[in-house]
Image 1 (cartoon, helix red, strand yellow):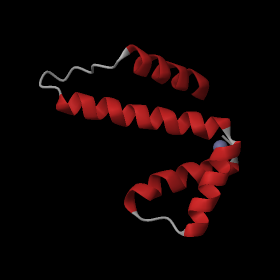
Image 2 (tube, protein in one colour):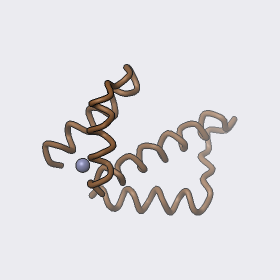
Image 3 (cartoon, helix red, strand yellow):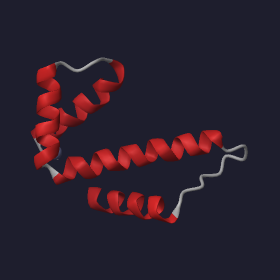
Length: 81
Ligand SMILES: [Zn+2]
């Protein structure tokens, strides 16, 4: 992970707690447009949130992902390593 990627992942986590400035959002989207690593990372985070939401909904604590969701999650995780 290079310096720009660290900055972007920091912005991504801060965006949950506060609204990003216009400049920060611009840098975020610009970086996402050029950086495959961060796009994969964002997708993996999004899928993990979906999985957590599904687990929360399920009475038995089971995660029920569709095949395509599971494949996308595995692919995203593979590309992070
Ligand atoms: Zn990046």
